[in-house]
Image (cartoon, rainbow, N blue to C red; front, side, top):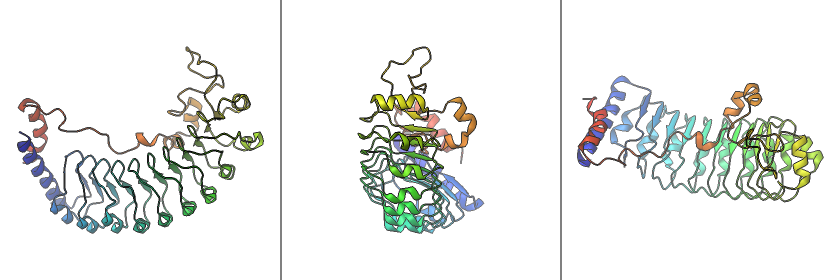
Length: 337
């Protein structure tokens, strides 16, 4: 029965591609089809501006994909790619690119050719370094590289003047480049779960910052009180689960300066769900009412990266056992013919 389902699925995919060519459509969604390779016909879908290939089993992308010069949105997350497809670097009109959850440990310097790029997700790929040439992507506003093996960030990152949202959560960073302070439009900074041993001093030079996550690092040196007081423009500075977070001095400061979040040394009040410093215990997950009212758009940019990936890990064939289960699956393909 798997062969039958494969037959209908393949023909459904081809029919959708032919429909795009015939109608000169702008968008094509081929996600969740368990494709191991792209059909050759895809190179003739020249009018496409949006192409969704996430949640498949692609191990490579044909070079002909680089001929789709109108593409602005490309989703390749949750596939089985073992390298960054070089042909993507030819898509100079791309604004959104997601290659998360593949096995891509290296990005080519040609990534810098994507000068129109505004959003780039490269989460959970095993990435070891960001190429210096990423600084050529001057329009980049959102950059996500969480769950990788980055040990340092390039100095050239400071040239991304339009960057508003940056997450490098769960990497191996022990410091930030001095040029990081040049990111004057940055609103959200997530460096949770790294190896930082001190509060980055350049934060005080970035007055547009609203949300900073430094929790679960190795910060041992308590920041100067005057330095922390200069960060009153922040709506949240999360320093929990660092060596300094339970020190009396920082605990006291967190009570007086409510934008600083550290875990409480006092048990949570069960009926209120708040800590001794008055901050919600799950503050990292959602804003309080005042924050949401003041700037809902800023908080949208501070959601966890895992919530913003374009797909999940569902599998169309996980539960296919007999014809009674397979018929609903096949029906979505049959309706095309």
